[in-house]
Structures are given as structure tokens and as C-alpha cells.
Amino acid sequence: MKLKTAFAALALTLAPMMVSAECSSSHQAMSCAEGMVWDSATRSCTKQLSG
Image (tube, helix red, strand yellow):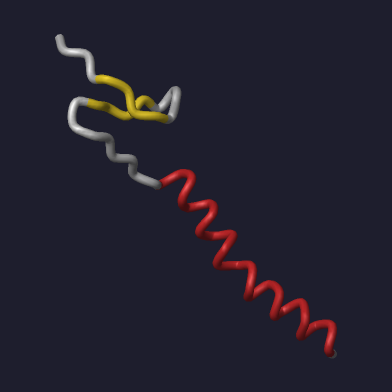
């Protein structure tokens, strides 16, 4: 019985961390400084080219 309780406590402890880790990688919005745009290929802000 104590083993089941320990596994349940571990699962309840780890579940929020697993959900937030998955969510942050796929749904995080990135904002860049003025004159910069988000480049998804390099996953960084780059200078915005005019034209």
C-alpha cells in the first residue's frame, strides 16, 4: 500500500512540470525589439529588412 501511495505522490508532483515544459516550447510567444523580427529558423530576433 505504501508503494502505491509513493507512486501517486510522485506522479502528482511531476505532472505540472511535464505539462508546463511541453506547453512552453510550442506555444511561447516571442517579442523582439523595435526594428527586429522573429526568425523561426534561427529562433532569434534579426534585423527587419525594409522593402
